[in-house]
Image 1: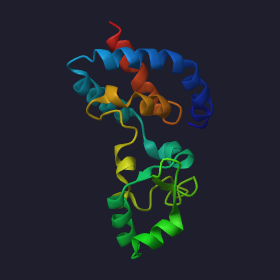
Image 2: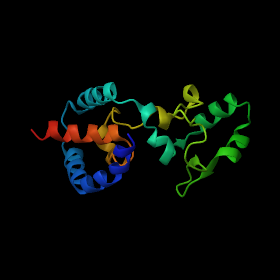
Image 3: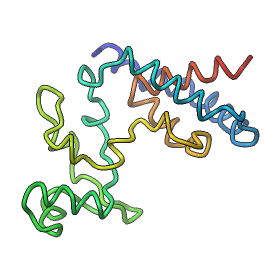
Length: 164
């Protein structure tokens, strides 16, 4: 896995222009069955991929925290939301709450999440490859191909399937 993660950013960078062009066309004319295809590709990839061997998303990027996320996780820690924010979060340039630092402070050495059942919505949905209207979040998906080997594989397989 280490070797895959080492090469992934460069592989994603090499495909970035191609991916942008592909997603641009996809946005204009998405196939009717795109959502079902993406669920199929997502499930197929994650039947082979074990996130616990990787956890690169938790090590290198941080999720956005919604107000609901903050309240739920603060309650879990028996903290007030403001205390949780002061301890773990900061406002980014778009005024979204994000982690103060990465890797995620809730990630264990074994790649398990200590707040898995309470984790933020962004974490639950990551890498967003099975979301409805997949074609509308192309920037996120292109960015995720440099972080998540599964997202990279899903996008590459999607391009192969839709090129026919």
